[in-house]
Image (cartoon, helix red, strand yellow):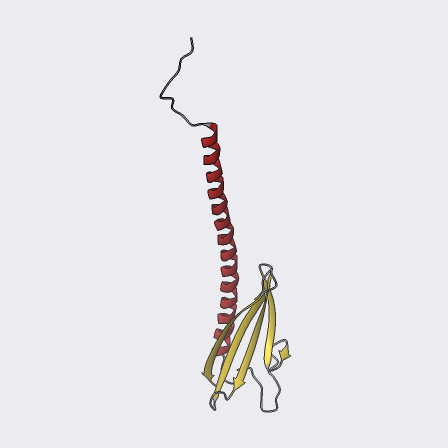
Length: 143
């Protein structure tokens, strides 16, 4: 004898498959958010490293005695404390956690007014996509 139930409860195979598709789409969205979060953290880490390098250089240059402040002397000779001199700036390259950072220093003597020095520090780096990024700080101090 065959029994028939009018109020059968449960899910059909089609309902289960539709639920799994919806769940898979949701999980794919979550995984994409995770990838974007990791990428954002990596960019933030590089920006923080560059900002710290710029602040470190600025603090060192701002705290030097005025007689030790690097720059161009009256004869046009640049101070020898920096390894490379290029167009009125000193360039120092460092690698940190696999990223090459370039730190540029530029000191304008008697600018914007006499007996002052304008100090500009720029730290730049290139990401994996070949895009150039930079952080700059500028300050004026008494010579």
